[in-house]
Length: 333
Image (tube, rainbow, N blue to C red; front, side, top):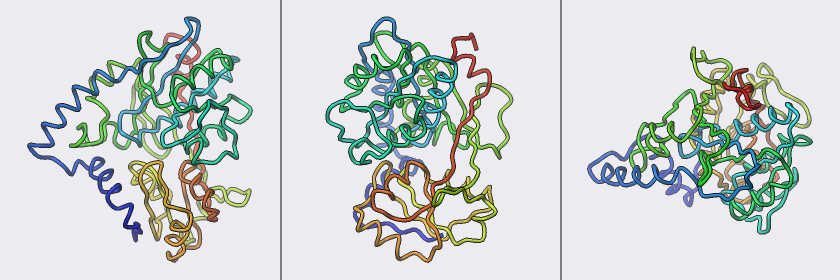
């Protein structure tokens, strides 16, 4: 697989990939990691003012990107709405510039609302409004009149009042990342602290992988890729020379998922999480690769759309196990 990385992206990618691989392990990094652990352990609960009657579902990830928290949060919002409650989805506005609080539309500019909010708005069309704002508190204040249940994407726990339900997303291929916090690794906080902050851990598992025998599991299902208003199934994609564009943490997970389905990309163009080069730069990088079709996750595809680059968006859906559905709907779990 050939990697294409623009010079301006190299430093940012080296930083991200170093954390994801645990490449920086030494005396200095261990001291810094100890300091990170102490700070992170006390900042897992985000301060938020909430009306006393609000039911809040908080969904956080174990690692600095790549845990599957947003797909899990979307699946939770869908299930709660299916149970008959009004849901408002408070999106993670990282690298977004929304200004005043707003409901995200499917055709919004990704630079304004953020890639994760845009993906959520499309997935929850007709199901729940997706809210984004400059601050989390502003988004929550705007959302409380739009749903009796708030799903918070990217927040594991809140304070002073704990969330009604706190879920910790874990990617089945590497639940705890490298097992270390930065700069030694990509774990958001020590694993025991993360588990203590959460009510339940949820393992996001590819449908082709063997699921664990216990605990909550969310199955990740993919049927192929969407291109020009049709779904290209995996057997249709297999003969093609495909490229893979990623703007996310731990892109190797996508490549592994493709490999399990018999797809080996001929080229890989990578960017840092949530970030894409300028449309002109991105088009130039992709045009130089000998591929028939570019593939991207729903999140990464928002950046290709902004650059008007033809591509197929990987089909991606998450289905919760019955025990977790019961918990979401107020059962004991």
